[in-house]
Length: 232
Length: 224
Image (cartoon, one colour):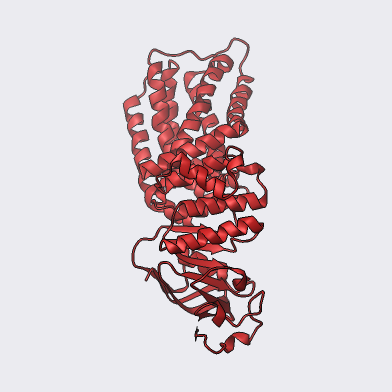
């Protein structure tokens, strides 16, 4: 098991965001985390990453994990070029990354033509692609993706799904926040719904009782469809 | 830790050179200070070596506040701080990287202050002027150690430059005193227990480094 969450709770001031959150994640597994705005999805991701402390509970890992995270911000230095940004993060993580590897990654992210341009001149979508390149290049053991599809066009979305699937195939555990779990063309994934301060985990998208293009309406999570398994 | 600190320092220097205006602003403030003090002198009058050394360190102090505020601001806007915190390295690498970049930038600014002291305040190099850069480096190590720690503490605060100044100036007083005493010798001042002052400066360097290493993770990890 790559990661275990046990009885996690978190407050913002006096307000309880969630409690009794327990979750296991294995290497090679993809967990799609969804839920309404303000449910605490991003907070849970930060707790998993170790960027935030839970009020109670534990985050347990079998080994020291190399974590890659995509948050709402790009993690990009706007005064550095795309290739300088990637080189900086690769060096910092001690990744052996040849110029050809970097060129390949930039090509996959359709940024090769802009490799030497300052990231400050990039559009939102280009910054998001550069951020994805940064994280996938580091080959982390655990990938935490907070709405990684936002700002991406169709070809870039295809790259995102391919890279995510490839990361899972090489054994990385992945937690991805998305409002549209059914739109993610990923196999072998579970869906977790964070709602009303509790987390329900469904084994597979088919077991998830959500609407076609979004999370389930309030109250519908209580009953899992036939054939699906639900653990809250 | 040293490897990752050097990578961070190299990146910060690259960013600062890219935005040359930031360092120019810090150096211009110091130069302006030296020029204003020169207006207090009558034509042809020479300021005492000790006063000139005091003005040099005052200019350096203001410069230091701008430099460390700027260095920590590089991680403020686009979530880069989160990336640094997730990197497989001790958080103290960030402190050391910023301190190393800060020393380089501060010494560049100080290299500009010295000719200004000669031109505007009528200073001349004394017989032991060659020791000057080592004295400056010894003081800069402590200044950078404290500046890098306090810079992390005030990030995200409103009025961070003034807050950084308020926090850091009292701490650095012993280093400035030592720097002034020893620095005056470089401009031909009298030798007044230079060895003792250098010892004090080295001791405070050690204190700031020893304090920053355990404290920096708390200052930098503060949850938003």
